[in-house]
Structures are given as structure tokens and as C-alpha cells.
Length: 156
Image (tube, rainbow, N blue to C red; front, side, top):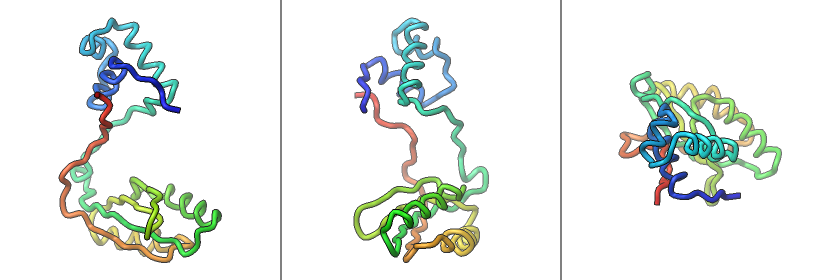
């Protein structure tokens, strides 16, 4: 169920997406509220699951994860048991940052990061290709990144 968000809520969310370390006082000042109502709004949005958590974002290249691959995966059967087995296996691979179920010619799109192509090759042969039910994997290596953000367009 979608929550009703007013302009204050949207401004608060936009600020938190940019810097989750801001205090409620700092946020309140920037959105034009006093600290207590601002804090209550943040708590309500946490309780409603709008704010799912607060994390530290890392620069993958600065920690040696230089290669990003998008893998299109097709399963050989579409039964519930294969779907569940596949999704559980994927959730266990730290190299897989995202997994999306698709409609169309392929079943899943994975975003994978590794140190280099050789590390992806090891991941592919030792982990991904060992998952039962996979019929086909098409790997696409990203050469460069034009845009990458975790910020949703909340301010209208």
C-alpha cells in the first residue's frame, strides 16, 4: 500500500537519500520544520517501511571491484521449485548485487561485481553455472558507468 507523502516528507526523503548521517535538527532546518515534528515524520516513515534502512555507500573501484557484469539468465523450466531454488542460490552470492525477474526472452537480470574478468570467470564456473535449472547465461561486461545512483526521484 502506498503511503501519502506531503512535500515535507518528500524533502526529508530527498535529503536522507543524499546524506543519511544528517541529524533531525539539520534536516528540520533545511525543510522548514522544527526538530520534533521532523523527527516524528522520519520515525513514521521508518515504521511504515518507506525508509528501509541507512547504509554507507562504497566506491566499488576503490576497493578493487573493477568489473561490472550484467548477466541475463534463462531457466530451463519455469516451475515454482526451480524458481525458488534459483532465487535462494542467487541471494547467497555476495557478487550479485541485484537480481530482477523479467518478462520476455530471459527470466532474470543480474548485476554482478568482481575484481576483474578472471574473477568473474571463476564466479561463473564455480558458482553461477552450478545452480540447477539454468539453461543459458548471457554475460554483458559494462565498459564504463555513465550514471549510478541510489536516490529515487521523490521530490515533485
